[in-house]
Length: 316
Image (cartoon, rainbow, N blue to C red; front, side, top):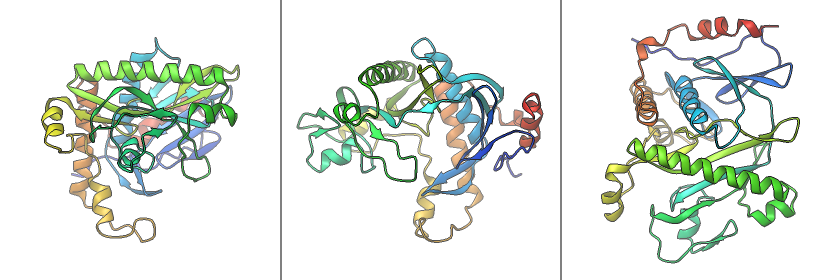
């Protein structure tokens, strides 16, 4: 049986449609926005396939965290008209992406582990001590901000001084954003630990409303915006130099890179078993993070029909 997927969420009756890589957005009057999370899987700046339940799971994990951090920081959520949908405030997104890291980890060119291995100790306006090992817990969580590339460019590392001097944020905005980020991360690590997980690092996006108030946007502490490790096996794996056990969703990415240059070549058809494996990882992540079970049988096959019906009050 083929599992239900939402690979397109075009709804002509809704106004001002913008199609992102994985989300469909509709701007409503009154500075409100409908955000529909599809099941599309994006990597290498293109869509590879669609993963059953991915959109609903990410929406509901973010909902869990938004509701469990609302006392720390205001967020963009107004309501949830559907399991795949957020009705949110339309914000002016700040041009700085905030990444909080609790461990010396990462694989990208801007990750602190990559820079540390190159011999750098000063990065993002922070000095790290000598003698740290890969995947080791940092003395205290740090913020490693990057410029937010809106036009397809690459994110660049920034320090607090650069952010303020370049006018990306005012000092007051930076103080607010950094305070929110560290407090959100502390709450995330605390709740994750209760679930047998380690919240390793995460990214946050903030925006401002019409009055200039800073508000948390996008998503929070999902497996797509955060790195989680399994707590039970972490210490032994760290001591033996093994990669920590995590929610490894990269079956599809690895399969594709073994068969073509994903930035240039046509993408081969992704085998159904890989897609199902990836879906199972998202389900496991949902259940471990939220502590709730995910019943796939409750997900209707006609997802777009369900969403359209739930969004009828917002039709033009």
